[in-house]
Image (cartoon, rainbow, N blue to C red):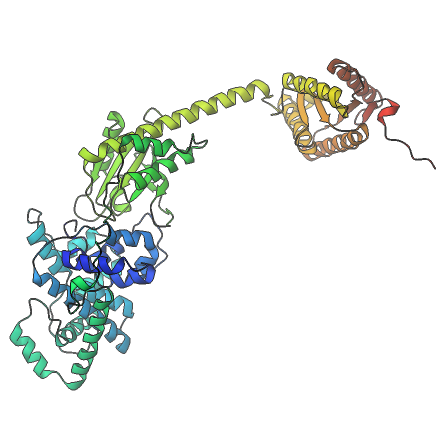
Length: 604
């Protein structure tokens, strides 16, 4: 199909529809109308829509369903990325018009007789001469390729099973004149109507056609006349009516055809990928790489997957394509041949081209419904390396290692470097976090807590704003450890830390001061406000201890900043207030504050 991926790629047809379409908005309705005139592009749309890796959500027995599944951008690619094919064959154009007339006749018969869904009947009529299309492509454009039947091609393209079965029935050449009773007889009746309408099969016997015309009754002739008008109307929509001179369609040059290779060298590719800065997540890296492969390297689809060398399985995690489809089958098992190629790429670091053998699809290529994939290795040093999988299944442009390898390899190298940089930054962040964080409670450690206290004391001295400090100590913690074990002691510390973290404000500082002691620094907080918080803390910690089945309570000492105070002075007073709580029975808070720190008492 690469030699002639679209019937509308025939040079004269290509010029006509491109001249007309450049003045149209090619939305879903217009693309459906175009594909209804193109048996080969319709097949490609059905194959792309019926990819096993995606959930279609559509019954793919009509052109409209395929377009709805793929979306407008991908459907436009099917047609717009196709270069013109020059051939003087008039038989092929006769076959093309006969296919369209048969499709319209089959649709009419289905509407009239109710034998099948009309859009499905149209599709069967459009594709019923597929063996002749393939035979012409084989003989004229690909004579070096081995001969294969249309049935083999249908299986290779893994079209919906119901569509394959119906098409195989239409390929028969039964000449029965009985009323339509199945898909095959309906299409053959439609062919006779197409011939009566003046769109005969190119291989039809002229004498037989004259005899059929003579034997036709008035009803058949009236139907044929209506059919001719419908065919001419369909062709006229995109300028295919031969009665319209090509020069009258449009005198401006046709729009530029998109090609598989986009403009720009390796330096531009690197700038495009790195232009968004350093991604902070792995997903950001692979999203940038797959998008660059599609936008700047001319691929239709790009997948990123992690590879397990032990099992050989590939797990797809990200994809980029013009269609808004979700991956539903993500874990893929390569064939032995694909697996050997992936191992080679993993060892050498070079991209490898995977090509599907002709026959029932299997492995990566079968699940992704493509004949070629370029597998680009990434992160080869990791236990689970990765691959970028790139293809041009929509535009059907061959992947050439000689021209595609450099950019693909650059993508893989950049992806590996960005991933290594991200891992290094995360290690540094973890190291910095562990340097200032208590690993058990995930609170700030003593050093960070004291630094925060010094900072807030200096700020309170400059601004005159209030500052309050709480010193908290878990009650009878040694006895809890002895009775319940050190593991439960750790649980108690973590539970108290969680309550502290959830109770204080986001801007307050909580640290593990040492052992079972915690320090809370409350900036811009009055003693009265801190007293409310302290009461909430010791009651919440006791309640959490009851939920855990542990005798978990806390004693709290409270003090506030006084002019001239140092951090050490605040800590000393808070520690004294803490021991006052211990001396008065624990599970409470005590305060060491001046009378001037308290709110004024209103007069009676």
